[in-house]
Image 1: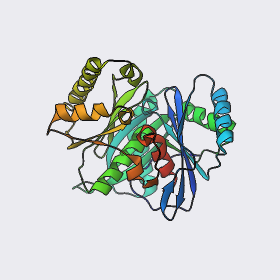
Image 2: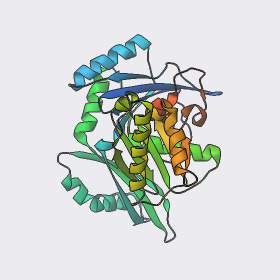
Image 3: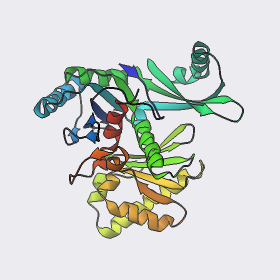
Length: 312
């Protein structure tokens, strides 16, 4: 097991079946990808399990679902939800690996002290600035949260290989969108909607996340006029967020926006030419051989995690 996130393209490894498990708030979303010469296949249709309570009980439920679907992955990648991870950005000079890790430990010492209990952290070097300083992104997680994930997977009969995060999984898809569309920009913004929570993740040589007051389950119950007001509220929250960061050219939508296409249409109408609204469609971005009716964008995090398993 290692807590290792990655937001850069890497060569594929030789693993053929990778399982991504999104540990959301009150649910697990599971997706498996099978790699061959033609691209990526779905050995199973991604699925969601509503869970609560004891990690061992959750593990037993997951085990039953895995056994029923005959899931046998080569690698397992778990993703922590955005509230379980603290991101920090540093600029440090180029030094040897041991010196760099000592410098990182020194610079985040106050962050580690402020978090109650044991922690794990990992870092990714994102490049260099004009002064030859390295841009470094650090992710810090509670050990207890990783222990919960490890217990769930162990009881389910799975070996955890990598622990990643919800925000970095989404940023990876946004990078793939830029690669496919050749629309390059430094400011990347993803609005991700789940059934019971929503958030923004913003990237520019660092990661910022912010909770949004949008509940898809409640939204689904509204009439057309109420839905329009709910989307308007979502747009207002996005506008407030951009008071604190540089605006992107594109806002990417993910998750339940695929269930409610009017969200994209109304957002584009309200933002007009200020932003381009795009959906992160994993079928196109990951080159998945899929002709089904279920919109796979609902499972963006777990599919991106599964794809992460193929990267070195």
